[in-house]
Image (cartoon, rainbow, N blue to C red; front, side, top):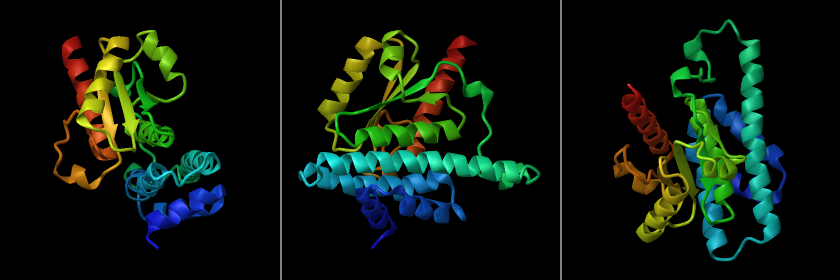
Length: 225
């Protein structure tokens, strides 16, 4: 099996231990962002394909969500412990990203799309953005958006998203937060992203999501100067 298939199989069991061990093994040589991009999202795309065929019941969908949550939490805990133990290690060799205070301010809210697995995508996008220094949040997003406390909203999809659905999503959230930039993250097909420009409105990989959010922050900064 491929690493993505192995991760997916472990998600289905509802026991995150083996999935966490796979993640830790990857992180010995790679970064958390690379693990999210190559393995975790790859496994979730397999899950989404099964979900679209009606092959996943509520128990399995909940198992997947819980496993993804546990993996993200464990990676953060593991890196924090590793960082504390290696405080004298040069910054360039550490895996923990230092926060860029210039990117803080009003949060970037990560909202799941319509599918049951989109919650997982939102968790991954939020953590990826945090690692790049952005104030990204998932919990409490709806309340904060309606209160006008959002400058950027990332709506995260794993299922296939048509242009009509993408446009509708932008209009829907623009009505709720007129001044916010809406980014539709279409994470169901990484292969399509290889030809994509980093400033696209609908990024399809974590790398282009981060680039799109960075562009949004840059536009805001220029307007304030």
